Length: 249
Image (cartoon, rainbow, N blue to C red; front, side, top):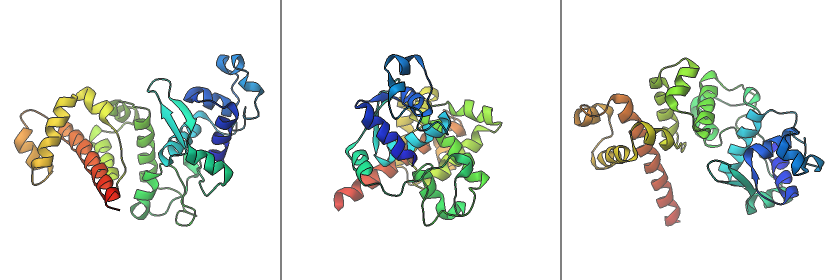
């Protein structure tokens, strides 16, 4: 099990590890840091060599979201095991993650929230037997780009699509309660102050319809910029709603 491989490796080295170093350890790459720290002499070295770096990045993202590991530091991304991760090692439960091409899913409409909330986490009962649709795979790829903080316009260009198509996917995923943090991009192209201004507008308005927002701010922002800010607003609103529900329990 891929998650178990990660957790056992972290427990064996008894310290947090930079994400890149951990992946080198799992894939059996004899990098300078691996050799200098004698990590090539550990039992964990090469235990995940059957998979590539992209696969392990995906598993680490899913494990972080599930709370089994935690990551600190934007640049080095130091990874360590959480109490939940240690508990998982002692008593593993179902957490099967396959690489993108092998990922199984039901219909996109029925399983979108489950699929995208878990990133690439397989639901043993409901997601067996069918290949993920191209639509779902495209959204998974977009999530991975966001996790790596790739500029959305650069991502669109690399995929040969319009930024508008990327925004369509983002809006669909947010509607399915996927919490996506694109502020690294909106703060760059709009600025935090402008995003906050638009968020406050959406909060006070009776609707977050694009046409209405364009009537109010169309002379200042273009449609793509307003949609970006609206996505940030919707994510924050969704997070606030979840927090409120939790406190009422």
